Length: 499
Image (cartoon, rainbow, N blue to C red; front, side, top):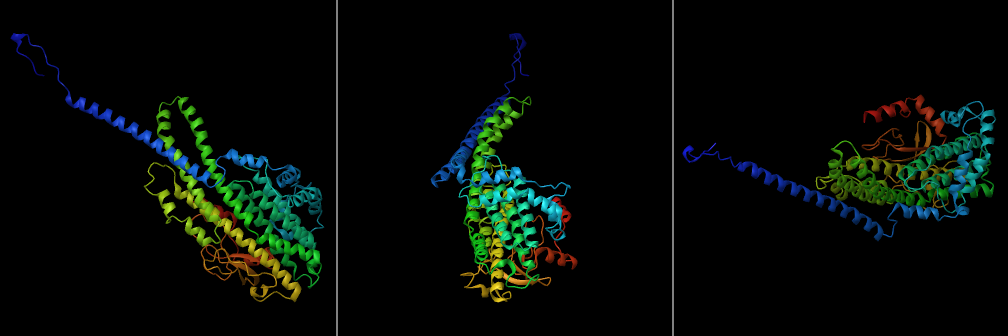
């Protein structure tokens, strides 16, 4: 410490600590810059989110969840198919008096016949349910009682699909041809109605329901060898033939499926807006009311991250919505691949203010988009299978090539949505059975070798998507006997768990 001479009344001179003053000044400047950065960060996040909303408005689409709900509220009851379906779901009887459920028949469809007491009991108890579902097919609009952001009762909807499959199976086993075709048509319309609720989970539930229903078309043809043509299925009767042609037309009309997919992704975008609004309200109050002192600064810092996540999700939904409207899977997959400009922008370091993993979102959306195109392929193969049945009735045998169906039954063969070159659905054999098949996600013609079932969220599925022409259950049992069967449910879940 420096001092003044004692003779002059020396007093200590305090040190000036210039380094401390410099540090304090630097700290104040740093705090000022951080506050400014946080304010700009929040402003930029809000600006991006509002720009995304304006782009939605510019397209003439609903810009809020409330606007979508208002459209649902405007549907008149007398035009509303969902009211009849919800009434049917409330009356559905899934379990017999013996404790046997419809799921028991799903496990082995060939083990039960119509004169079984349990089968008759379940069908009799659900006669009103089946009639309500049939009536719903002719209603022009669908507005479920649920309102966004809630979801519809997917489990009950799947149970209705199981009932329709069960009824159609019993009708097939007893050769009640017209009833079976009507049930399939009712099931297709029911599945489309499930997808009308604007939510991605509803779309996926609808595809699961329709996939189950369309196995009935595979099994319709399983009885072809049971009785000789031409009287089988009553296709010599004009009204039954008209029913089959109407079902073919319904399967090939994909406009509703495409529209509901686009609507679902748009609704997911609006949920993101609502999420941010709710987060601002609930998150701030929760942080301020918390006893943990770090919650408040964490909320202040994290809030723009959530806003940017929502903005990114909205743009992601827009891109995937466009992909679902494209004619084939290769085009859709190219649009939502990580190499595209939109997705590289979402996932690269050029979005450092976001904390979400858009890569995982892309994989989830890619999987959902793949499911849509698999459903498109299944519908087209089901339509061709029905046309083959008409051809067999008219000519006494199946066509040796699908080209024989043109122009009498199709103006042009339905294309394979997985074929980048626009090739048609193929006819082949698998384990000695006649099958239709699509080349699948890998884009390779594997000659009708079925894709392995399971949770394939990453990478391409290997193999083709196969539609049996002589009964799916007989074909699957033969494949399992040859050691070529699908993966077991246990193996599927083990693969999913490992991933």
